[in-house]
Image (cartoon, rainbow, N blue to C red; front, side, top):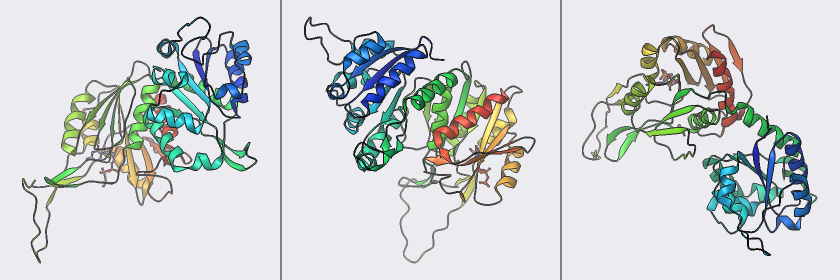
Length: 399
Ligand code: CTP
């Protein structure tokens, strides 16, 4: 899987830097070509001689070689690389990456990277848990970087907790999985709807729902990373994406999402409908702000929106696939099966608001997949990206 792959290993100033030597060796043993980029602090923990002996290449650390002035091009490294892994990544480096503080060769290389970037944090448990570190990691995720979460265990500070860099063989496993999954949707075009819809009441108000769009965005990313060309129709959300394989179309209302979905569905192999579309919209939109009238009730009349999933189900061609979601509070399986049939879906992803960690706004989800034969597969609670890959794995069996 790794044979001939170009991998940039970034090493920063953590005691876990010694593990980077094992990581580099394991990658090379699997046939990868490795280029090490190390920060000045990283060199305090592991010597470049060890690393260059392992890789057979000079280790890059400074912008210039002091003795002959050779310039090290971070731009060229960004183009050369098939994957960058920063292991160990300290809190300082993670902070610099999140904020574009390009004061060393490793950060400039990161900023020039055209390939996916994996980050394996290593630090003390309190530093890891600190809101600033967590915020920076969230920022990195929003850039499309992959975080390899640290393990819990004995730390250099002699404390026990989460912050230990993941073991090199586990990191290699993550990288191999990434490459093995990479191409299984190559040549496929996917339509994904995500997020809530807002139904306008007047210039300052809308009817909406709590959907964050996280599940749909994770799906878009997972499909793009596995080689698909993705059209993501997104309702209002703050989420950011950064993958060249994803074309994002922003919409606000269910009507706008419907128009875009009906047009785009004609050109795709499959649709995954993850959006929490408002079922109703106000019958009238007030051009001016609705004013409070003392003592009066305000009665809103709502009229139904079009069902995007059912409409696509009607025009679905023989070879096209259609996947829907059902977010239920009760009678989950029964309702999901009804929706599967009514909307002419190939399978439906059920998540229940009764399960802790599932549903809107969380970073995790717990799903069951139900197919047309009524067969149900349950999955454990996972982060939304892993859930997205489970859905894609199921999906591939249908293609
Ligand atoms: N859906 C859609 N367009 C709508 C409503 C729902 O495309 N107007 C899609 C959702 O994206 C999801 C599936 O249909 O994939 C089920 O959505 P859900 O809101 O659970 O079902 P509804 O059909 O709206 O039924 P209810 O709200 O009564 O549960």
